[in-house]
Length: 215
Image (cartoon, rainbow, N blue to C red; front, side):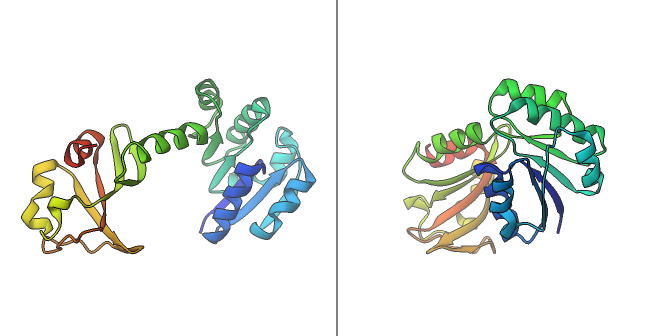
């Protein structure tokens, strides 16, 4: 369990709070608008109404005691940048800030952000790949050039085992799991036989995955 300071409780911030609640994390939520704070009270450990660009207010929160500080401010970039900078100055261990443009990303990094959340760009990339082919069901970008795909088992794989196909040696990709009727099996052995209508989770470079699955 981690202790998380979440600043900015618009739609994006509220959704983060709800997901963290599902994961049973300890969350301190902050916004200067009382209605937004009240809206997340069922999902957080504690909440404060206050201006995160005020150094005295941030000091009162004890930012250095949190494992992660998330700046989810979306509309007011000046406030986002000031908050990010102050958090780092006050000893925050890990500052994760939301960016709306590539310019915002550059300025946030220069002002202390350790990591960047860029929901519009990340979602656009996911959607472009997810809907570029009928047999892709999900996609997780890991780093430049590498990803995890959830993809339909090719017809020519059905009835054959992982070892028989020699997927790792032939295509340089790793099988992480297989999914059938919503159930995920992560116990992958060379004897595992693929079935029609299964989905497979594969890890590898985009180039190798695209070659293997004809994307």
